[in-house]
Length: 427
Image (cartoon, rainbow, N blue to C red):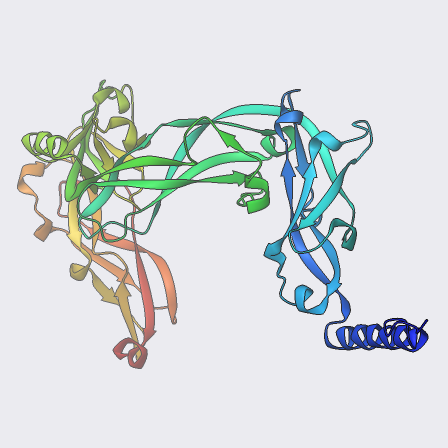
């Protein structure tokens, strides 16, 4: 019987198939070889509620929130991958031992195009710290960015809600110092209604980092609040006046009460400014702030003007809050005269020098000594200074006062001058 053509030269045919397979494998591996690539992938934490149900929260160190994933596969597949194609998860339910420090959570990785056996993560575990959950309530402080338009000041500021309750890991909550919301007011000339994001400031007066912020939970829908800013108009040249109470010692009188400063600028609501206008644009210091009882000489008292301002009225930015009230106490039958420094005669100033007064006036106190003060005027008072021994510089010098017969000088008078060369003075 003749052999079948199928079995003829069988060994040769098998050999040919083997050679073909080898050639195919060689071609495939040369054209599409097996390679390994590495991807830095963020780790997604799952089932945080598993920890929080026990009144605790987990903290992840910043360097632990990613892992390096190694991917092995055919080149054409692996080269088309990106980090977004890979998922790395740390399931808190997979914690083996909650009593270690830190607690280790296994990291698992997956990729639709690659089998799990060809994926590996380094590190293979995420280190977490488990802390007690803590809740604290904070007042929301509203701050401004920029300055309102000319003629306006920030009046009232209202955040809605006014406070916020924050929950987070105890170590993080204890770092919080203030909660602020910043609203832009630059150039504004009308009231502002805006939404402002909350900023969490730690005790070093620095903002919490983004990684720290993600652990915080709020009792409001989002970490932002509505802010209303009412702008107040500015009014200048508001006079300050004061009453006084009591009676000076026998033989003395109150010659006057003056304020430093004597005028201030304020900002207020329309209603408050209208009310101030009806009072003559004057802020009065009540009499009980200035008690002259049994006084024999001048005295000063400091008054905090803020305490005296009516509702919806405030001092403008940069205005000093303190007013110094000066009460002039003089003997009866005496009077204070004001003489311009330009009327003071300068004597014996060295040639080549020039003297300039540092103030515009001096006060001269005169007492009756046989003549009536009603007959005395400033034109009757002569004032001079002697600069015979003075060189260039600033000085406080005595003023010589000459009075007509029948009057007596109560106190010495001094003034401040600056002496310079005539060329310097011209400059």
